[in-house]
Amino acid sequence: MNTESHIRAAGRTDVGQRRKDNQDQFLIAELRKSMQIHSTSLALDEECMLFGGRSGQLLVVADGMGGHAAGRRASNLAVDHLISQLLNNIHWFLHLDQENDDGFIESLKALLQQTHTKLLAESQDDSEHRGMGTTLTLAYIVWPRMYVVHAGDSRCYLIREGKCEQLTTDHTLAKQLVDAGGMKPEDEAGSRWSNVLWNVLGGNGNNDLIAEVRRVELQKNDTVVLCSDGLTRYIDDATLASTVEQYGDVVEGMADHLVAMANGSGGIDNITVVVSRPDGKGTSGNDGDLPRSVPLVQLDDESDLQPDSAESMSLEELQIFANEDTLPDERTKPKS
Picture 1 (cartoon, rainbow, N blue to C red):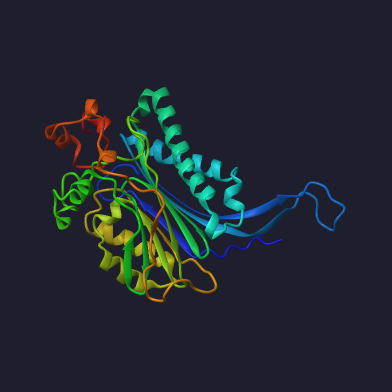
Picture 2: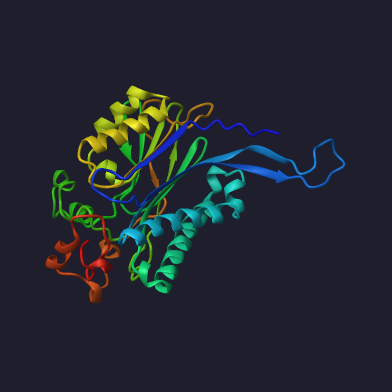
């Protein structure tokens, strides 16, 4: 029987300096094959639990929105539903063939869509939670591969030998403007549109969820960081890379330091970070080079990013709720 965990990962979540409640959630988990013995003729204790080898490491960050109770409920429901689905989906426990993982990719997309549908259903049944939504960024590591599935503006980073790469795309109006050439990249972070999200789980549900999925080949000593925008509004790539270099394998200290930096810089939002140093034997790719992020779900054209014309908002309407993470369906709600 093997119950020892070898995960080198740490997660922290903090309410920040301005908010009264924390609507963020995180999860660090190790998926294992297991068996509950009830009766056997073998030399095993009855009612014991046997564990097989590790199947993978799961990292999740979710940032809820839609009002205090609704935002907290949205992120909690999303992570809870993910757990229940993962424990009942055989794909997560099988050995994945790198050349034939299309079925697994489809299960990732379906998993996010199911969670999206779950949030929409509860939102419709409960007026208190109407319009609730959440970002969700998930990394599943089966050494040496990492699969990242994402919606919203929480992020997944890969840091390797002092180089930092953002593996996810911010699904914000500001990022749309940058991609369309209507805004300079250096102006994106400070834009009033940087907090307005067009793609999240739940929300108004007028458009289908777009699940952004990437596959990455990891190397030994890589560091993976997932975080909510309560951290990234204060921490740039260079600062993140230097912090990783400073703390190395001390992931608990690294997570604490990142949260402290965000709080020390203002802490205007909830702050959540998950840090992992995946272990594995051997490397893949060229040492020192950041791996290619293979986009498995891409946006075909800019039309995929546009809201339905009947639900489009004027700039004046957008300005009402553009100062914090929010959703277009909240434009009729008064600010707290």
